[in-house]
Amino acid sequence: MPRKHAVLSVLLWSTVASAFKLSLHYMKPLQLLFYASLTSLIVFGVLYSRELSLRKENLRSAYLGLLIFLYYTVLFSAYEELPAQEAQALNYTWPLVLVLLSIPLLGKRPGMRVVTGLFLGFFGAFIVVTRGNLRGLDFSNPAGVALALGSAVIWATYWIMNLRDERSLIEKMFWNFLFGFAYISAVLALLGGFTVPPIEGLAGAAYVGLFEMGVTYLFWHRALEIDMKFASNLAYLVPFLSLFFISLAVGERIEPSTVFGLCLIVGGILLGLPGKSFNGGAAEI
Image (tube, rainbow, N blue to C red; front, side):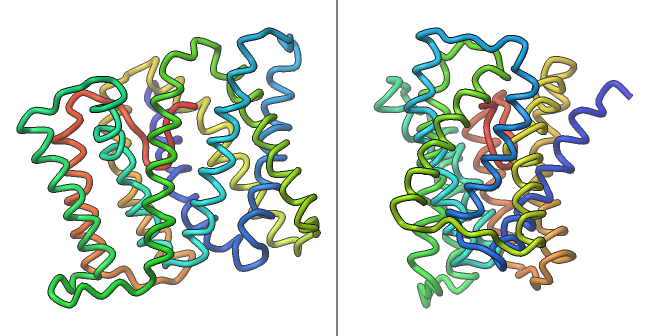
């Protein structure tokens, strides 16, 4: 099956929102990030060990790794505060944020189609956070909403800064997570937050490290090489499949407003980013 890498990537990324939420029952966001990053670092360390070399280009990972550290800290904090369905829908606005940031940073001039896509997508996010109560403007958890949208801003910033990095995927992954792991370790050391969570938490963190931060990127990279159009189109299923897994594994009742808002968000992305390839939880790192 030549397209199996795309299908496998989409299925795996569709489960990680549930894994975030379930793992956070047993540990705090920084602890989840520590153990997940350690797992990912081990995986890419093994894959990269034969090619390991020190060169000045790898210093780029000092700031890219910092953005990864900030992104997952904010994202996991959002999942701690919000229902998983809301956190994942709001985080999925990052391609829309990417368009906004590209205007001043890359000198892009948006046309009417892009502006319409931005309006549609962010209106969808507004429906999600108000749970469809547009008149009441009732934000159930403003801090959680700010964190989820903040994670989208950080990831879009990372994506733009990563555009000119020509290192191989595995090399980037290893060095980015090496620096990111150093940052999270330093923060936990300062806060005295080193603890060993229950086995359920460790299993969840290992799952996140393998399939959100780890090998799924390799499957996705291969999928884009084989059939970029098919993979790119299939990726838009991720947030909707995520809702299914959130309902099944986490036990959340999926709100109609979440589904409708997410449809508008994805529709806005399709309008505002024609021909681009994105995935549900992350960009090619």
